[in-house]
Image 1 (cartoon, rainbow, N blue to C red):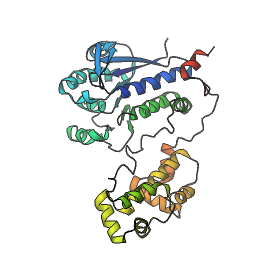
Image 2 (cartoon, rainbow, N blue to C red):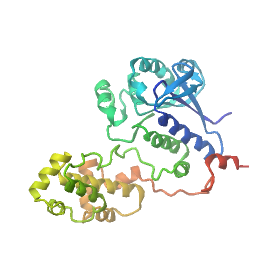
Image 3 (cartoon, rainbow, N blue to C red):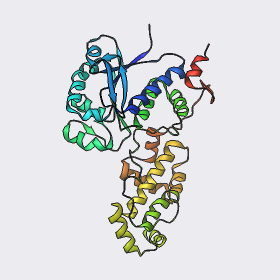
Image 4 (cartoon, one colour):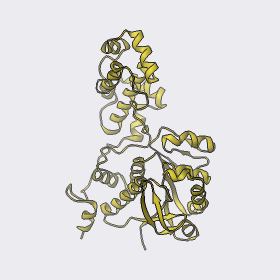
Amino acid sequence: MSTSRTVVLVVYDGIQLIELAGPMDIFGAANAVTGSPVYRLVTAAPRAGTIAVEGGVTMNVEHSLAEIAAGDDEIDTMIVIGGNGAFAPTVSAEVVRDLPAIARRSRRVAAVCAGSLLLAAGGLLDGYHATTHWGACAMMAERYPRVTVEPDRIYVNDGNRWTSAGVTASIDLALALVEADHGTEVAQLIARWFVVFARRPGGQAQFSAQLRVQPARTPAIRAVQQWLPDHLDEDLSVAALASRAGLSERAFARAFRTETGSTPAAFVENLRVEAARGLLETTDLTVSAIAKAVGYKHGETLHRVFSRQLATTPDRYRQHFSITHSVTGTNHFSSRESPAAAAGNRP
């Protein structure tokens, strides 16, 4: 009896290739790392045959969605891939038609990027928390009010529903699915092989604090913006930043807010919180040490900021999102072997 988990990848004209290739390669690497075919990958489109991928590439699809929907084989995971085709009414209607039937036979249902809109259109995200590409979050919230849209998440897992932001977030989602199935060690080995420096937890923002604000037009203020992330443990008062920019406090504060859309204090706080989150996720430093590293004199201050911004404490955040739990056991492949080669070397 096969122990492979069947993963149905839903595609259509206009998918983003990386959003398909990323998960396929991650699941394929899981087969190599574990030394057995733990995942069986199946592609399905409105019609079997050739589809047009964004960028002018074509690919052959082995099954139609109707065929999958009418079948009786057990499906572990259905993943709807994203792409501009999801916004084409005729394409969307063809895809959505068969999704509910496939979802009923699936242990879990997932979507990448604009694929979340197709799940929502089929009623498959009603009552769930979900995310999508940042550029489509407002549209999703407006069109599908029964879905709780989380616009600032890399991926969201709510029950057996998994949704992700766009493009490279498909890799984060696939790694999270592999980790849920086979544990941290396997996911970490795959992440290292694919040079994913640090696997991003789902709660991480789609944008960094730097990207969430406009770059200032004034060169001196823009230079301060660029200097700040590497100097969070220094005096970052408005007076100190204004002096660095060669402006008066009042002129600096007014221009900073006008040009970036944020006050200097809020921008600094967001940078410090982002840096603290990274340290909580990837190190074993104490909360007090992390607070000092990002510019707060006391751990209590970091607690207050986390409570206000994230509605949690640094300790609870670490419990949920830390990726530092040690990877034990013997590596399944050496640094010179590919996952496929490692699998081939197994007795």
